[in-house]
Image (tube, rainbow, N blue to C red; front, side, top):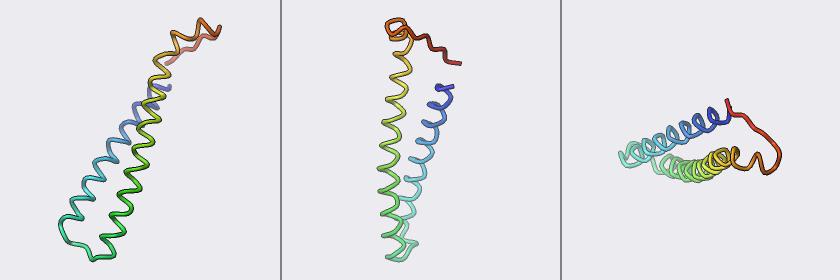
Length: 82
């Protein structure tokens, strides 16, 4: 279950990064007025920050999941991933 969550979350991160790049290309095309450009640039920065945080959290979760089989016998807990 967690492997599906991790895979899907990383897919969302990838799609969001592509959206950010497309938005930056739109900014470069000069098809927006100054206010729209500022608002889009601001939202791109916020989205980029959020994607970075989510990406780090997901990768941390993935590393934790990889360690579970090694730590389970030590803590007396057996976990099974499907």
